[in-house]
Length: 111
Image (cartoon, rainbow, N blue to C red; front, side, top):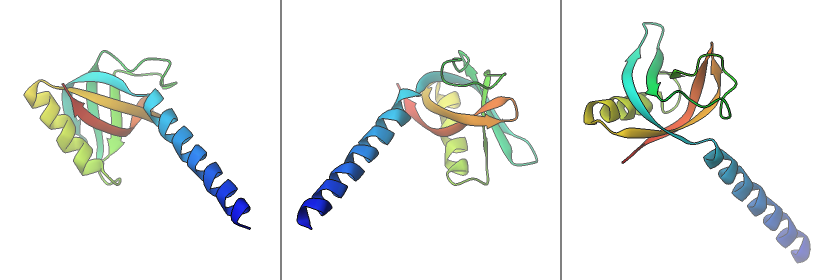
């Protein structure tokens, strides 16, 4: 029984480590040139350079979008706006598309 529990715990650990590594694989360092939101609650970050085609299949990769109402949406907006105003870059992990634009899974400031 203990051997089975150890085996299952090891499998869970390997799966978590693999998922964490996959999340970091899509990260890109981008400069926010404009940040804003529409009245619908959809927000955008215009970025330079564009999100690479290898990290997103969306047709227009000049912006990254997210919903203000999503978990973390307000924090992502504040972080992106802070980066733009301070002249800093963002590490962005694109995931899926909102319309024709990549959606931000997460983002954070970098030097």
